[in-house]
Length: 274
Image (tube, rainbow, N blue to C red; front, side, top):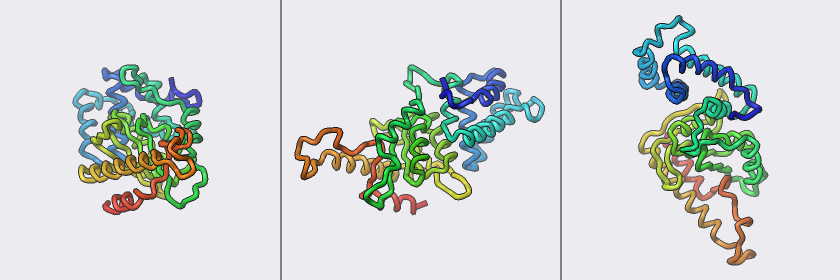
């Protein structure tokens, strides 16, 4: 079920009008997410491919304002209104309310209250002893809910989310764009350090932007994330002079939010290659 603080009934009702024309809920939600992502990237060709598919099925024969493409756009506007009103993961709430969660894939997103607690435990937004930019990593990001919570606490951090489900990765990219965060979102299995695709969202005074990285950029991002993770693990496993060899897990740095100064130069070089 959706978070009780987020009313998504209007959005679900709009998408339901499309589903009742003979489409599955999964197809409607997937196409809606892809249309939003393509529109924000000004990618006309894949956008029009989806529109043409609905046209071939006769969905475009409805009066203007009731065509499937019009209803998708209406749901997009409703989503933006709800996000502006709640500053929460409305997209993930629609996903859950629309019945997209699955026991088979373990796709039941973390409740907002738990995300808040996780961010507090990780120290997101706490004062740092260094000037290094904080990096927040979620290796199984779902719709990006934890990143959104962290983004409200420390919007100037760098956010990295990864999920092996293509739809979840796209939802996270959209959410990071909507919240105007500097982020990298990766589609791939974090357990095998697999990168299939990736998106970059960027902060702007005019609002967030999103773009899909090309193959070379994905490889560079893969190298940076891998190096950052390995260096962080080495630092956590290295006992401090005062702790000795029996350092407890509670004394180690949190893997959810960690500053990675030794990797910042690599990140700057990656961003400078755009």
